[in-house]
Image 1 (cartoon, rainbow, N blue to C red):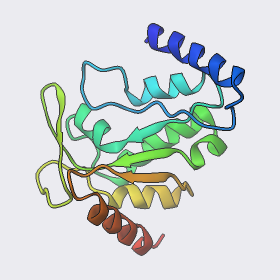
Image 2: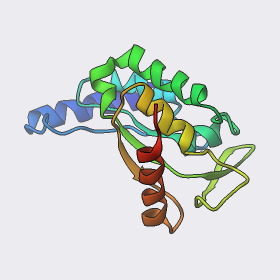
Image 3: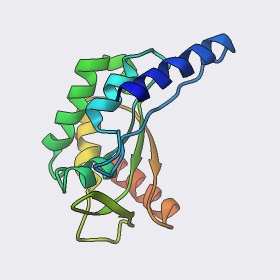
Length: 163
């Protein structure tokens, strides 16, 4: 953690030195237990400077936490944590990845498609949580080979959520 934080401070300095502070750098949550990249760690990295915004991969979180994301409240708990630590304005348009991911004792094994019925997580509870909290993240599908189809399905689900 300390080494990563130190490197992010060096990167921050280079970004400002070269006039790129109008860009965002998004440290990402990771899916393997041996990797730096819990939600809490990513939030801490984002506190280093305003140029850092979280890249939250909910499939990675679910894999790392052995299937923890099931309900709207599971998602809201994590989203509210980010808001409480970074502020609503910084979190409103955070960067987000989503896919179902196979996991085992060490976390992430491989990305799956929305056709998977074993692992998850499911997108609909997340869509509800996002709408309830009035968050508008940039969402990237990371499904294995069906990114376009699964992105279209996420868009359909999101548009059909009525809160």
